[in-house]
Image (cartoon, rainbow, N blue to C red; front, side, top):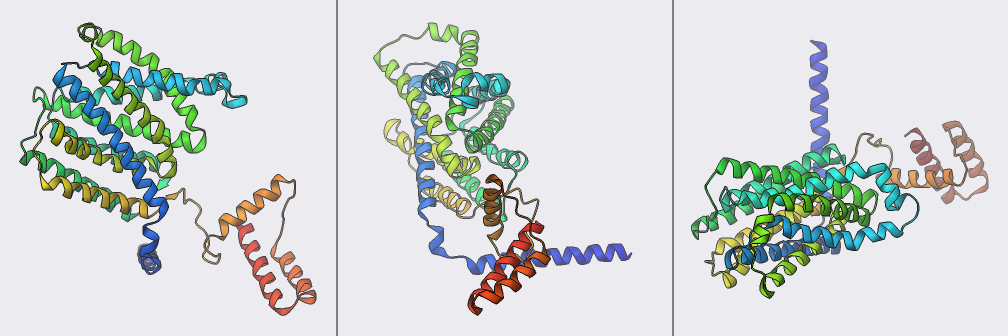
Amino acid sequence: MATQQSQEVFRDMDSDNRSNSFLKTMRKFNLHQLFSWQLAKTLAMGQGLAALICGTAITSQYLATDFHVDTPMLQSFLNYVLLCVTYTPILVCRQGDENILQILKSKWWKYVLLALVDVEANYTVVKAYQYTTLTSVQLLDCFVVPVLMVLSWWILKTRFKLVHYVAVCICVLGVGTMVGADLLAGRDQGSTANILLGDGLVLLSASFYAVSNVCQEYTVKNLTREEFLGMVGLFGTIISTIQMVILERTEIGAIHWNWKIGLLFCGFALCLYTLYSCMPIVIKLSSATSVNLSLMTADLFSLFFGIFLFHYMFSGLYLVSLVIILIGSILFNAVPTQTDPADPLPSVCEEGFYENTVATLNYFTNQGTVLRLDRKDAQEENTSASSRTPKHEEQSYQNYNADVSCSTKL
């Protein structure tokens, strides 16, 4: 009974601490800090990636509707070839552990699996349109965000706050508004041959994209962008070539080539290549989850272009959807996430001091100096310092020793 009462007391204390922390955060909140240059740059680059996805969608739709060309593996193959030609030679020219031979010796199987996941993510989402509707694809494609958050929590040790979950819900609400506008405009296109299979392919594709993006975030933040793109380009070219020969050799042989088809293939490949090249930069500035929230506006950009190119019906809900998704993206990026808070800081230490102390200790350690201070030594140095320093410097020196004593206990 006493144990149960003590547990309830600790729960109440924990909830009180969380509420106090939230109130402190709200009091410190400054609206001017929300709209920072970093946030504006992240949002602008995210919308640039969404515009590139819009370019791949428009070129694919032209190939399918005007020229009856349906070869998703061939289109992806061109992208992987460009990545291989551009980034793999960079790894060949590097020395040491970043050389391609060293990478292949130690991590070749990891990049084979990563390239396989990336290739199948691109392929399954295109195949899904043959079995289910556009509405289902747009809604179920949001499944990539919760999968990303789970994988980021597990693999990258990212800890999200309540505001991040609220921001994700707002973005999903914006996608729902876009789907509602599609239904009102009569754009529930696609096949209904096997809706269950099509929806399953969309969920599978979203899971593959989440795995690929988490691996990409880990690689670009811990290794290099060139290593990720070079190895994915190399193995992606091999895998897509094999899959293209097996699945699409008949469709490729039936294409009546002309300069328009060639131009559309080139446009698709350049848009996807630019997307792959720029996405690691944006992910390094923010996170894979943040980037995917920004990419939710890609369908809206395609709809806006479709109004002029394919004579879609305009609806004011499209603009409402765009605003809602942007609000969710701003809210998600405005509050930074935390990483691996397994060792919380004592309350007696000032906020932000721990990181500076660790950096300082690492510097002295690298120079071959071992810093060992205990409380007794600190008190002795405070005594000697007070005898040879002015009073206004004595207090500063004592605070410094107290901080160092606090950090050494950590």
